[in-house]
Image (tube, rainbow, N blue to C red; front, top):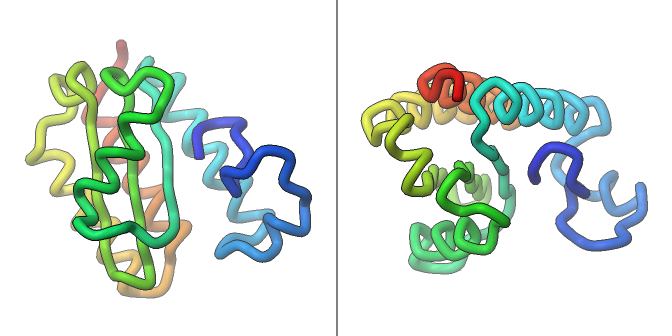
Length: 137
């Protein structure tokens, strides 16, 4: 999901589709706001994928990242709660501003929130930390 994008990832999805996902409407609004802030404050494009990842999970996350409109300037948070997997993929330009060490620190914070049962909060925390590390464009 990128800011303003259909959260189910399906074109023409109805509100009912959203209700069947892992997030409430309030949580979706919170995620959308966090994405908008991260995008506007950094000039990068942040996206979130929540769902099962094919094995190898890193390869699948990289494939999803490569399908974004501007992969070089994009950051993807791929979360698979059922598999207990989190992948953060940064494009070439984004990686210059968010080193692997900073992405790992954000992942640790996210995992702590996930462990406490807060999927939405974990994603919001991760987006905030990554955007803070990336700084202004």
